[in-house]
Image 1 (cartoon, rainbow, N blue to C red):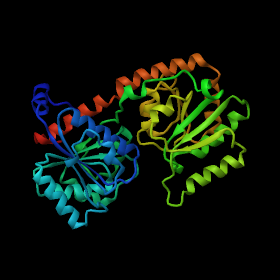
Image 2 (image 1 turned 90 degrees about the vertical axis):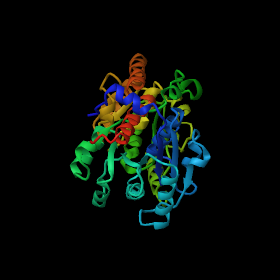
Image 3 (image 1 turned 120 degrees about the horizontal axis):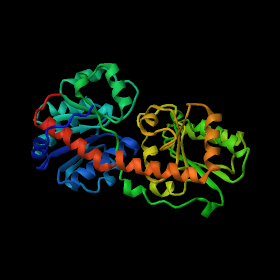
Length: 380
Protein backbone atom coordinates (compact mmCIF):
# COMPACT_ATOMS: atom_id res chain seq x y z
CA UNK A 1 0.00 0.00 0.00
CA UNK A 2 1.21 3.51 -0.79
CA UNK A 3 1.39 5.58 2.40
CA UNK A 4 1.49 9.31 1.95
CA UNK A 5 3.70 11.62 3.95
CA UNK A 6 1.89 14.30 5.95
CA UNK A 7 0.87 16.94 3.41
CA UNK A 8 2.92 19.78 4.96
CA UNK A 9 6.05 17.62 5.14
CA UNK A 10 5.62 16.49 1.56
CA UNK A 11 5.18 20.06 0.31
CA UNK A 12 8.34 21.14 2.09
CA UNK A 13 10.34 18.19 0.76
CA UNK A 14 9.23 18.49 -2.88
CA UNK A 15 9.41 22.27 -3.08
CA UNK A 16 13.09 22.32 -3.95
CA UNK A 17 14.82 20.79 -6.94
CA UNK A 18 15.99 17.25 -6.23
CA UNK A 19 19.10 15.93 -7.97
CA UNK A 20 18.20 12.58 -9.50
CA UNK A 21 20.26 10.10 -11.52
CA UNK A 22 18.41 7.57 -13.67
CA UNK A 23 20.50 4.49 -14.61
CA UNK A 24 19.66 2.16 -17.50
CA UNK A 25 22.00 -0.10 -19.47
CA UNK A 26 19.34 -1.26 -21.94
CA UNK A 27 20.32 -1.02 -25.60
CA UNK A 28 16.79 -1.20 -26.99
CA UNK A 29 13.54 0.59 -26.25
CA UNK A 30 10.88 -1.46 -24.48
CA UNK A 31 8.15 -0.71 -21.96
CA UNK A 32 10.61 -0.17 -19.10
CA UNK A 33 12.73 2.19 -21.15
CA UNK A 34 9.68 4.17 -22.29
CA UNK A 35 8.71 4.42 -18.63
CA UNK A 36 12.15 5.78 -17.72
CA UNK A 37 12.12 8.37 -20.51
CA UNK A 38 8.64 9.61 -19.58
CA UNK A 39 9.59 9.77 -15.90
CA UNK A 40 12.90 11.58 -16.46
CA UNK A 41 11.43 14.12 -18.86
CA UNK A 42 8.49 14.91 -16.60
CA UNK A 43 10.72 15.23 -13.52
CA UNK A 44 12.86 17.73 -15.44
CA UNK A 45 9.72 19.68 -16.36
CA UNK A 46 8.88 19.78 -12.64
CA UNK A 47 12.14 21.64 -12.04
CA UNK A 48 14.28 18.79 -10.75
CA UNK A 49 17.89 18.41 -11.92
CA UNK A 50 17.76 15.08 -13.72
CA UNK A 51 20.80 13.11 -14.86
CA UNK A 52 21.08 9.84 -16.77
CA UNK A 53 23.73 7.11 -17.04
CA UNK A 54 23.32 5.08 -20.24
CA UNK A 55 25.19 2.52 -22.28
CA UNK A 56 27.15 3.90 -25.25
CA UNK A 57 24.83 4.40 -28.23
CA UNK A 58 21.69 3.86 -26.16
CA UNK A 59 18.52 4.86 -28.05
CA UNK A 60 17.30 6.37 -24.79
CA UNK A 61 19.58 9.35 -25.31
CA UNK A 62 17.38 10.76 -28.07
CA UNK A 63 14.28 10.19 -25.92
CA UNK A 64 15.50 12.30 -22.98
CA UNK A 65 14.49 15.55 -24.61
CA UNK A 66 14.09 17.57 -21.40
CA UNK A 67 17.55 16.75 -19.99
CA UNK A 68 20.58 18.98 -20.39
CA UNK A 69 23.03 17.12 -22.65
CA UNK A 70 25.77 17.66 -20.05
CA UNK A 71 23.64 15.70 -17.58
CA UNK A 72 23.86 12.49 -19.63
CA UNK A 73 26.87 10.20 -19.26
CA UNK A 74 27.54 7.11 -21.38
CA UNK A 75 29.48 4.24 -19.80
CA UNK A 76 29.86 0.51 -20.46
CA UNK A 77 27.54 -1.09 -17.91
CA UNK A 78 27.64 -4.83 -18.54
CA UNK A 79 27.97 -5.59 -14.84
CA UNK A 80 28.99 -4.14 -11.50
CA UNK A 81 32.42 -5.79 -11.72
CA UNK A 82 33.58 -3.23 -14.27
CA UNK A 83 35.63 -1.23 -11.79
CA UNK A 84 36.45 1.53 -14.27
CA UNK A 85 32.75 2.17 -14.87
CA UNK A 86 31.98 1.99 -11.15
CA UNK A 87 34.70 4.52 -10.33
CA UNK A 88 33.64 6.94 -13.07
CA UNK A 89 29.99 6.71 -12.11
CA UNK A 90 30.80 7.12 -8.41
CA UNK A 91 32.73 10.27 -9.25
CA UNK A 92 29.83 11.51 -11.40
CA UNK A 93 27.44 10.98 -8.48
CA UNK A 94 29.69 12.83 -6.04
CA UNK A 95 30.63 15.68 -8.40
CA UNK A 96 26.99 16.36 -9.25
CA UNK A 97 25.79 16.01 -5.65
CA UNK A 98 23.23 13.39 -6.68
CA UNK A 99 20.60 12.75 -4.00
CA UNK A 100 18.70 9.87 -5.63
CA UNK A 101 20.12 7.07 -7.76
CA UNK A 102 17.29 5.24 -9.53
CA UNK A 103 18.01 1.99 -11.41
CA UNK A 104 15.50 0.26 -13.69
CA UNK A 105 17.18 -2.93 -14.95
CA UNK A 106 18.15 -5.80 -12.65
CA UNK A 107 21.68 -6.08 -14.01
CA UNK A 108 22.18 -2.41 -13.06
CA UNK A 109 21.13 -2.85 -9.43
CA UNK A 110 24.55 -3.98 -8.09
CA UNK A 111 26.33 -1.16 -9.92
CA UNK A 112 23.82 1.37 -8.59
CA UNK A 113 24.28 0.03 -5.06
CA UNK A 114 28.05 0.22 -5.41
CA UNK A 115 28.11 3.84 -6.59
CA UNK A 116 25.81 5.01 -3.79
CA UNK A 117 28.13 3.48 -1.21
CA UNK A 118 30.64 6.31 -1.44
CA UNK A 119 28.16 9.16 -1.47
CA UNK A 120 25.13 10.49 0.35
CA UNK A 121 22.84 9.43 -2.48
CA UNK A 122 19.93 7.11 -1.68
CA UNK A 123 19.12 4.12 -3.88
CA UNK A 124 15.70 3.50 -5.45
CA UNK A 125 15.02 0.53 -7.72
CA UNK A 126 12.13 -0.13 -10.10
CA UNK A 127 11.12 -3.69 -10.91
CA UNK A 128 9.30 -4.01 -14.25
CA UNK A 129 9.07 -7.80 -14.67
CA UNK A 130 7.65 -10.87 -12.95
CA UNK A 131 10.41 -13.46 -13.27
CA UNK A 132 12.56 -14.18 -10.20
CA UNK A 133 15.60 -12.08 -9.39
CA UNK A 134 19.04 -13.60 -8.93
CA UNK A 135 19.74 -14.26 -5.23
CA UNK A 136 22.93 -12.18 -5.66
CA UNK A 137 20.69 -9.13 -5.42
CA UNK A 138 20.43 -9.74 -1.69
CA UNK A 139 23.79 -8.00 -1.58
CA UNK A 140 22.11 -4.78 -2.77
CA UNK A 141 19.20 -4.90 -0.33
CA UNK A 142 20.99 -3.16 2.53
CA UNK A 143 21.67 -0.06 0.45
CA UNK A 144 18.25 -0.03 -1.19
CA UNK A 145 15.89 2.56 0.28
CA UNK A 146 12.81 1.67 -1.83
CA UNK A 147 11.81 -0.81 -4.53
CA UNK A 148 9.05 0.41 -6.84
CA UNK A 149 6.94 -2.38 -8.36
CA UNK A 150 4.96 -1.42 -11.46
CA UNK A 151 2.02 -3.59 -10.43
CA UNK A 152 0.71 -5.49 -7.45
CA UNK A 153 1.62 -8.72 -9.25
CA UNK A 154 5.25 -7.61 -9.46
CA UNK A 155 5.19 -6.59 -5.79
CA UNK A 156 3.81 -10.01 -4.83
CA UNK A 157 6.56 -11.73 -6.85
CA UNK A 158 9.20 -9.64 -5.07
CA UNK A 159 7.80 -10.45 -1.64
CA UNK A 160 7.78 -14.17 -2.42
CA UNK A 161 11.54 -14.05 -3.00
CA UNK A 162 12.24 -12.23 0.26
CA UNK A 163 15.24 -10.39 -1.15
CA UNK A 164 14.01 -7.00 0.07
CA UNK A 165 12.26 -6.01 3.26
CA UNK A 166 8.51 -6.01 2.55
CA UNK A 167 8.23 -2.47 3.89
CA UNK A 168 10.62 -1.18 1.25
CA UNK A 169 8.36 -2.35 -1.61
CA UNK A 170 5.83 0.15 -2.95
CA UNK A 171 3.48 -0.19 -5.92
CA UNK A 172 3.39 2.67 -8.43
CA UNK A 173 1.66 1.66 -11.63
CA UNK A 174 3.05 2.94 -14.90
CA UNK A 175 1.59 6.15 -16.24
CA UNK A 176 1.36 7.51 -19.76
CA UNK A 177 0.89 10.86 -21.44
CA UNK A 178 -2.85 10.35 -21.85
CA UNK A 179 -3.32 13.40 -24.09
CA UNK A 180 -0.85 12.02 -26.64
CA UNK A 181 -3.06 8.96 -27.15
CA UNK A 182 -6.46 10.61 -26.86
CA UNK A 183 -6.94 11.60 -30.51
CA UNK A 184 -9.07 8.94 -32.15
CA UNK A 185 -10.49 8.32 -35.62
CA UNK A 186 -13.80 6.50 -35.79
CA UNK A 187 -12.64 3.45 -37.74
CA UNK A 188 -9.84 2.07 -39.88
CA UNK A 189 -12.63 1.05 -42.28
CA UNK A 190 -12.37 4.59 -43.70
CA UNK A 191 -8.90 3.77 -45.05
CA UNK A 192 -8.71 0.03 -45.71
CA UNK A 193 -12.32 -0.98 -46.12
CA UNK A 194 -11.85 -3.46 -43.28
CA UNK A 195 -12.17 -3.42 -39.52
CA UNK A 196 -8.75 -3.68 -37.91
CA UNK A 197 -7.83 -5.81 -34.90
CA UNK A 198 -4.35 -5.00 -33.64
CA UNK A 199 -1.82 -6.01 -31.05
CA UNK A 200 1.50 -4.48 -29.97
CA UNK A 201 4.59 -5.88 -28.30
CA UNK A 202 7.97 -7.49 -28.78
CA UNK A 203 7.78 -10.69 -30.80
CA UNK A 204 8.45 -13.03 -27.92
CA UNK A 205 6.61 -16.29 -27.10
CA UNK A 206 5.36 -14.89 -23.80
CA UNK A 207 3.26 -12.36 -25.73
CA UNK A 208 1.15 -15.15 -27.23
CA UNK A 209 1.15 -13.83 -30.78
CA UNK A 210 0.83 -17.39 -32.08
CA UNK A 211 -2.49 -17.55 -30.24
CA UNK A 212 -3.41 -14.17 -31.75
CA UNK A 213 -2.80 -15.61 -35.25
CA UNK A 214 -4.79 -18.78 -34.52
CA UNK A 215 -7.60 -16.57 -33.20
CA UNK A 216 -7.44 -14.56 -36.41
CA UNK A 217 -7.90 -17.76 -38.42
CA UNK A 218 -11.13 -18.53 -36.56
CA UNK A 219 -12.51 -15.01 -37.00
CA UNK A 220 -11.48 -14.76 -40.66
CA UNK A 221 -13.14 -18.11 -41.32
CA UNK A 222 -16.49 -16.48 -40.69
CA UNK A 223 -16.06 -13.01 -42.18
CA UNK A 224 -14.02 -11.15 -44.79
CA UNK A 225 -14.30 -7.59 -43.46
CA UNK A 226 -11.52 -7.73 -40.86
CA UNK A 227 -7.72 -7.61 -40.88
CA UNK A 228 -5.25 -8.38 -38.09
CA UNK A 229 -2.09 -6.35 -37.37
CA UNK A 230 0.90 -7.30 -35.20
CA UNK A 231 3.13 -4.34 -34.33
CA UNK A 232 6.51 -5.21 -32.84
CA UNK A 233 10.08 -6.23 -33.47
CA UNK A 234 11.91 -9.47 -32.80
CA UNK A 235 14.75 -9.10 -30.31
CA UNK A 236 15.90 -12.71 -30.53
CA UNK A 237 19.44 -13.19 -31.82
CA UNK A 238 18.53 -14.97 -35.05
CA UNK A 239 15.07 -13.39 -35.41
CA UNK A 240 13.60 -16.86 -34.99
CA UNK A 241 10.44 -15.56 -33.29
CA UNK A 242 9.35 -13.55 -36.32
CA UNK A 243 10.13 -16.45 -38.66
CA UNK A 244 7.98 -18.77 -36.52
CA UNK A 245 5.06 -16.34 -36.73
CA UNK A 246 5.48 -15.91 -40.49
CA UNK A 247 5.50 -19.69 -40.87
CA UNK A 248 2.27 -19.97 -38.89
CA UNK A 249 0.62 -17.25 -40.99
CA UNK A 250 1.59 -19.16 -44.16
CA UNK A 251 0.42 -22.47 -42.73
CA UNK A 252 -3.03 -21.01 -41.93
CA UNK A 253 -3.28 -19.22 -45.33
CA UNK A 254 -3.59 -15.82 -43.65
CA UNK A 255 -1.05 -13.88 -45.73
CA UNK A 256 -3.72 -11.46 -46.94
CA UNK A 257 -5.37 -11.10 -43.54
CA UNK A 258 -2.58 -10.92 -40.93
CA UNK A 259 0.29 -8.44 -41.22
CA UNK A 260 3.55 -8.12 -39.29
CA UNK A 261 4.49 -4.45 -39.46
CA UNK A 262 7.75 -4.49 -37.51
CA UNK A 263 8.27 -1.78 -34.95
CA UNK A 264 6.39 1.53 -35.29
CA UNK A 265 7.81 4.60 -33.55
CA UNK A 266 4.49 6.44 -33.29
CA UNK A 267 2.37 4.03 -31.27
CA UNK A 268 -0.32 6.65 -30.72
CA UNK A 269 -0.79 7.00 -34.49
CA UNK A 270 -1.05 3.26 -35.16
CA UNK A 271 -3.53 2.86 -32.32
CA UNK A 272 -5.76 5.41 -34.01
CA UNK A 273 -6.25 2.92 -36.85
CA UNK A 274 -7.37 0.03 -34.61
CA UNK A 275 -11.02 -0.89 -34.08
CA UNK A 276 -10.03 -3.41 -31.41
CA UNK A 277 -6.88 -4.00 -29.40
CA UNK A 278 -6.04 -7.53 -28.31
CA UNK A 279 -3.49 -8.63 -25.71
CA UNK A 280 -2.94 -12.37 -26.03
CA UNK A 281 -0.10 -12.48 -23.47
CA UNK A 282 0.61 -15.62 -21.47
CA UNK A 283 2.03 -13.43 -18.68
CA UNK A 284 2.19 -9.65 -18.29
CA UNK A 285 3.72 -7.74 -15.35
CA UNK A 286 1.71 -4.62 -16.14
CA UNK A 287 0.42 -4.11 -19.68
CA UNK A 288 1.56 -0.69 -20.89
CA UNK A 289 0.15 -1.25 -24.39
CA UNK A 290 -3.24 -2.08 -22.86
CA UNK A 291 -3.30 1.27 -21.05
CA UNK A 292 -2.18 3.10 -24.20
CA UNK A 293 -4.99 1.46 -26.17
CA UNK A 294 -7.49 2.42 -23.48
CA UNK A 295 -6.28 6.04 -23.56
CA UNK A 296 -6.65 6.02 -27.36
CA UNK A 297 -10.25 4.93 -26.95
CA UNK A 298 -9.68 1.51 -28.51
CA UNK A 299 -11.80 -1.27 -26.99
CA UNK A 300 -9.54 -3.90 -25.39
CA UNK A 301 -9.81 -7.67 -25.20
CA UNK A 302 -7.06 -9.25 -23.12
CA UNK A 303 -6.14 -12.58 -21.64
CA UNK A 304 -6.35 -12.90 -17.89
CA UNK A 305 -2.66 -12.12 -17.40
CA UNK A 306 -1.48 -10.64 -14.12
CA UNK A 307 -1.23 -7.09 -15.43
CA UNK A 308 -4.46 -7.14 -17.41
CA UNK A 309 -6.46 -8.24 -14.36
CA UNK A 310 -5.22 -5.17 -12.47
CA UNK A 311 -6.02 -2.80 -15.33
CA UNK A 312 -9.31 -4.02 -16.82
CA UNK A 313 -12.68 -4.18 -15.14
CA UNK A 314 -14.41 -6.97 -17.11
CA UNK A 315 -17.25 -5.81 -19.36
CA UNK A 316 -16.81 -2.24 -18.15
CA UNK A 317 -13.43 -1.07 -19.42
CA UNK A 318 -12.63 -4.10 -21.60
CA UNK A 319 -13.12 -7.83 -21.95
CA UNK A 320 -11.06 -10.71 -20.54
CA UNK A 321 -10.57 -14.21 -21.93
CA UNK A 322 -8.71 -17.18 -20.41
CA UNK A 323 -5.03 -17.42 -21.35
CA UNK A 324 -4.55 -19.67 -24.37
CA UNK A 325 -8.30 -20.05 -25.07
CA UNK A 326 -8.42 -19.00 -28.72
CA UNK A 327 -12.07 -20.00 -29.09
CA UNK A 328 -13.09 -17.66 -26.26
CA UNK A 329 -10.91 -14.88 -27.68
CA UNK A 330 -12.39 -15.32 -31.15
CA UNK A 331 -15.91 -15.22 -29.71
CA UNK A 332 -15.16 -11.98 -27.84
CA UNK A 333 -13.62 -10.37 -30.95
CA UNK A 334 -16.55 -11.36 -33.15
CA UNK A 335 -19.03 -10.14 -30.58
CA UNK A 336 -17.46 -6.68 -30.46
CA UNK A 337 -16.95 -6.43 -34.22
CA UNK A 338 -20.69 -7.06 -34.58
CA UNK A 339 -21.67 -4.43 -32.01
CA UNK A 340 -20.52 -0.87 -32.70
CA UNK A 341 -22.46 0.58 -29.75
CA UNK A 342 -20.78 -1.84 -27.34
CA UNK A 343 -17.39 -0.91 -28.78
CA UNK A 344 -18.22 2.72 -28.19
CA UNK A 345 -19.33 2.08 -24.60
CA UNK A 346 -16.16 0.19 -23.73
CA UNK A 347 -14.08 2.79 -25.55
CA UNK A 348 -15.46 5.68 -23.51
CA UNK A 349 -15.19 3.82 -20.20
CA UNK A 350 -11.63 2.80 -20.97
CA UNK A 351 -10.55 6.31 -21.95
CA UNK A 352 -12.04 7.76 -18.78
CA UNK A 353 -10.31 5.11 -16.64
CA UNK A 354 -6.94 5.63 -18.34
CA UNK A 355 -7.10 9.34 -17.59
CA UNK A 356 -8.17 8.80 -13.99
CA UNK A 357 -5.87 5.91 -13.00
CA UNK A 358 -2.89 5.88 -15.35
CA UNK A 359 -1.86 9.46 -16.06
CA UNK A 360 1.81 10.34 -16.24
CA UNK A 361 1.24 13.12 -13.72
CA UNK A 362 -0.08 10.69 -11.13
CA UNK A 363 2.87 8.31 -11.59
CA UNK A 364 5.42 11.13 -11.36
CA UNK A 365 3.80 12.64 -8.25
CA UNK A 366 3.95 9.29 -6.44
CA UNK A 367 7.56 8.77 -7.51
CA UNK A 368 8.47 12.26 -6.27
CA UNK A 369 6.94 11.32 -2.93
CA UNK A 370 9.13 8.21 -2.73
CA UNK A 371 12.21 10.30 -3.47
CA UNK A 372 11.20 12.87 -0.88
CA UNK A 373 10.68 10.17 1.77
CA UNK A 374 14.11 8.60 1.29
CA UNK A 375 15.92 11.95 1.12
CA UNK A 376 14.22 12.89 4.38
CA UNK A 377 15.51 9.63 5.85
CA UNK A 378 12.06 8.25 6.51
CA UNK A 379 12.47 4.53 7.12
CA UNK A 380 10.38 2.02 5.24
